[in-house]
Length: 237
Ligand code: LER
Ligand code: MN
Image (cartoon, rainbow, N blue to C red; front, side):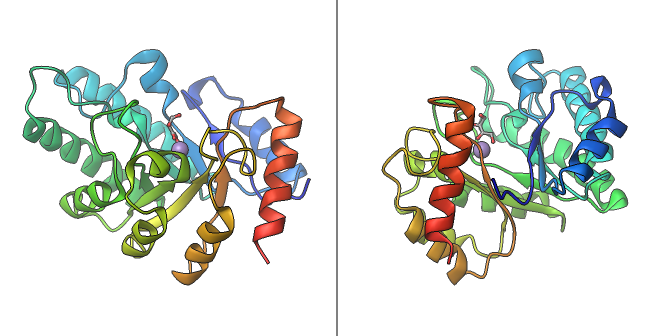
């Protein structure tokens, strides 16, 4: 269809035949810009912010394994839902401290392997912890590591940002990866977001990275992939 890369969503690299993945990616002439890690939160409850130190340690270890996997492709490792939530009865400050400590450890290992982490603000219905690009930037400043950037996801931004465009401009020095999904999380073109204007804004900030379609496979996966390319071709000139 004309895609340049493929983003991989991996719960635990230990269950992958890594050589086989590398071969398939190479044979298909694709790059891997980023590795999604959220399934470890969704399916195993691993979280970098959990009040329980053992759970945090398991989440850090998982991200370390993801960094090793990512180094096969020079991919960024996404810190999305694996950062967890602010649990009931826990102060925001505590959650932040634990997460900063966890992410520093992950980022230090990333530095050794020359791999970036990209922190993704997600909408309030998925987490109560880091919803806007502004919150993401403030958090990245607190981590204080050079290899932690920001992931701008248009689906989450449509729910949380006052202006998708102004937020992209404000976050221009932080954005290292972009997820595209339309307002309904279907492929770009199936909802009501203005991808022409979003792409113009990304060009305005001279964004040089990938835009990755993170979408529902609806009405079916082939149509979703085709619609993505069709919309991107019509707005990226
Ligand atoms: C992950 O990239 C994301 O956007 C979350 O909403 C998990 O699906
Ligand atoms: Mn996303």
